Structure formats: structure tokens, C-alpha cells
Length: 69
Image 1 (tube, rainbow, N blue to C red):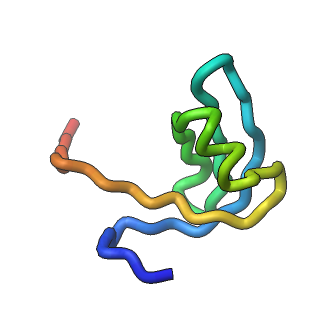
Image 2 (cartoon, helix red, strand yellow; image 1 turned 90 degrees about the vertical axis):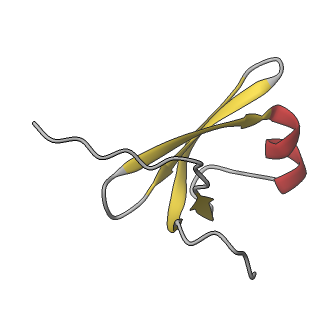
């Protein structure tokens, strides 16, 4: 798979919570921990996503924020 996004994290699906229209997919990665993605139910079904399956979390953002305490 080739993709232009540089924020790609490999992980395994911890859980999928399907609603009537959208689904929440929790992906366990080594660091920082777990990423939660909100995607359509149709996308979950089209990709055939299942718990424990290896996937990639690809993050595309129009902004990067920096914070300091």
C-alpha cells in the first residue's frame, strides 16, 4: 500500500462498536496506546474489519497544535 500521508500507525483492532450509521473502531498501537476512529458503518463492512485484525491508523490533519503547561 502506498499513501501520501506520513502519520501512519500500525496496530490491532481492540473493538468495533457499530451504530445505526457510524462505527467506533479502537486500534491498539505500541505508543502512545489506543487510537479511536469514528468511521461509517459501511466502511467497517466494506473493509471486513474484525477484532484482533492488524490494521493501519492513518491520520490526516489540516492543523497541528502545540501546547505547553
